Length: 142
Image 1 (cartoon, rainbow, N blue to C red):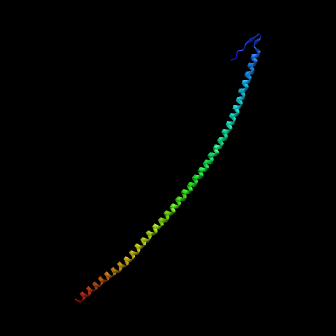
Image 2: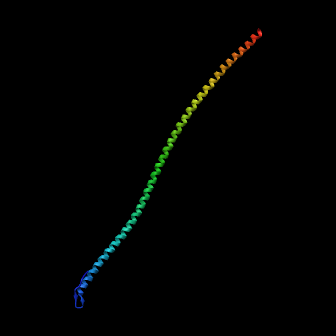
């Protein structure tokens, strides 16, 4: 704290005036610094808002790019799955056709075997009938 020398009518007016002038300058300098700081704060707030907006735009753009990439990958995977399914379907159809051919071949063999069996059975039955007729003739002739 400043101390003033006293004079006949109180404090020394020149000292007081110098002190008041010095305080006024310092106070003015502090106010100027505060104005500069307030302007800097306002500028930084505005810059912060702009950065937030830009960040949000970048985030949205990034999300959009990510969603496009995910969509592209999903479509690729879907095409791959469909291609694999088509290949598997073709293989299954081919296997089924081969199996059907084998079954048809077996069925044809069974038909032929049945025809042969029927012929042989007819022959056996015919022979048996002839034998039965011969037995009747033998009994009648006796």
